[in-house]
Image (cartoon, rainbow, N blue to C red; front, side):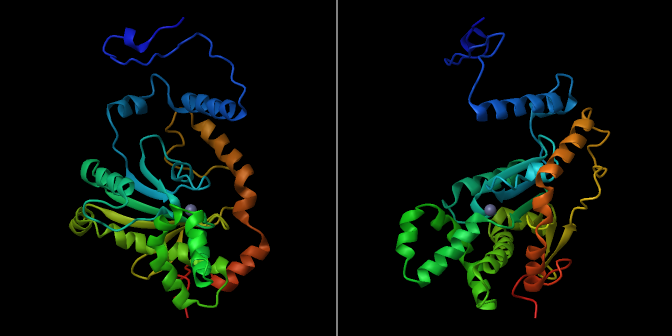
Length: 313
Ligand SMILES: [Zn+2]
């Protein structure tokens, strides 16, 4: 059976939607994989009687705005086991926040921020950074090449990445000043943390963000997902340090920690199974190699309550 949207009353679109009882079989492996994932999403979430979607059809009321990196490994919805409708997400290269610029500049980021704060009236903004960030590494490499007189070539290679990540130049300068002899990897890691701190500062350059923060109706958070250890760190502005919000995962503990979803969602068992699948997939990476851990402790000190790299004496 084939009919078009234009035949549906109240749908004045000219695009036809071809509906058949059985979808044409797809052979593209990626399409097969992702569409079967969408089928599971429907099964877990999109039941006709599911009250969540009845609510979401009327509109969104997200709990927070999350500004995260576009990196495929750091999806904030997945990392926080959130439900559809929970998080309003902006993702960009290196989870950066460009400062307020009247009439222009970083339009995509600023429009999303404006919508979340002024219209959705979110009460929390989380800037979520992460380890092994390609955008920050690009910046560190760009500076090294600039010092070596090769910046022009870098600029030609990356027409857009360079200007975008240049907002974190200030973070890199700080790192260079505080740990001038560190290796590129350590500088990048420190720069990930410092740029997160400066992004929080840049958020406050937007007048309506600053105002809401001062009135106590908006709170800013800096989180850092450490891909090496599996921890989630939180920025403590008073101490100018990061501390674990969630410590390292325990590989011997397979049961899913109790949370809001368990027992609440009708398909909670799927999530338990999903969590175990995720652990099986990522556990090894989360744990990291002993050598990498030793390197980390040697260069950054005790991760439990680690000061911003470059700041501890
Ligand atoms: Zn990144």
